[in-house]
View 1: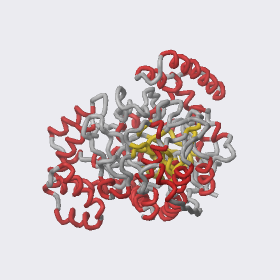
View 2 (view 1 turned 180 degrees about the vertical axis):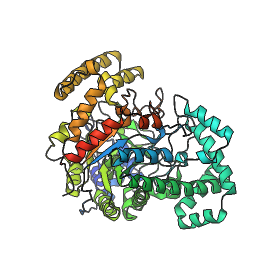
View 3 (view 1 turned 45 degrees about the horizontal axis):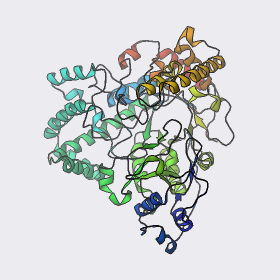
View 4 (view 1 turned 45 degrees about the vertical axis):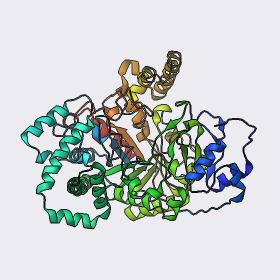
Length: 564
């Protein structure tokens, strides 16, 4: 990746690249203007199907483009939502990780307190081949939900219940052990299940039938097909039950659609020609990750996605909206452009490739009206101005992390920014208590992501930020602890103009450890930490319930930004 101002790359190659949706220059997260190498551009053009060997071929090739604009549906009432990763939501009866029965109980409890949304991380199918193999943003499919989250407690033997008790008492989620137990139960139950009911379900849903066949082939076990089909039938029944129980309590499910899938998963195997070969999506260098990031999943080919009418996106979205009233679009900027990194290249030598955002947004807007569903685009960090402009024009909600600015973005919204849902943080950030204590900085130093001098400098800056935040909230966290400061921040968000205000159970519990540290592959148990209290404990006491009840009351009594 060149960062020279005297750009000496072949002009014909640059024109050809731009005609195929490549950004031939961009600004990275540190404000540096970057110019992808000719070699990287040629590699990406080849992955897009362009018949090019090198710069000499560029002159014999040519351009294309389009547009449109439909607005998203939005609910008319303000909403308070509760967030918790389902895997972390352990109860006395769950098998080492939260399951769909736990999710239903959380929705009922939250609804009873006045909350109208329960949010969680993606619930999609994964592999769970090792104790740590549980990243919710690395599914095998964006359209198939994960059997890992099934409630199978009623079908377990006495010995299996003892195993559940052991798995429920571990400090960390053990994905492979939990899945091995659930798989054993599923296999036994599937063997004696009504074959005609399974066949009827498979006939009515060809995609999950295809998924079950792929699983059997992928695992080299023909008998697994029936087990996965049966598991998917139970998933549909249990997810439908969660929705019914949530709605009966006045609560809706807020689900999360990740931006990609793993390269050796079901979606890529099912439609291999839809994905670029020899490419991985990632992010260019920024202050947090000076070397950039390689996320590892293959990018969709823009032309193939457009020619299909965005069929993969529509299919995945429809399947989520069967159960959800609200859907978060992870990395919404990916509808406009993704950062492609050719195999063998470092993350600082990638190329931004543009997509048919107008077509994708039109399709999603139509679905929002069809299902009366609210959509939220994850637009945190630096996004191009055209993303925020389109989100405003289309009535698509964005996001903010108020612990960094004291809620300024929602208390005094900026011109040129979309309406934002208000929350203190996200799963990719330090918890509120962790932020106040600088725990994230300590962890980055211990993981070798920053050196000691940089960590000390960052901690000094953090102390100043925390003092500024505390002053604006009129609290003293050194004396009263993080709870008072957090509740003061939440009070401010609840009284803001945001149409949706989210509160995390981790923050209500005063947790200091993050659920995830982006970019960390080893050294920290990402996606494995259970909540510090079980579901029954939270539901039985009043320390959390009274606060949620109060936040819900303030949201309901305060006029806010609603659909025009």
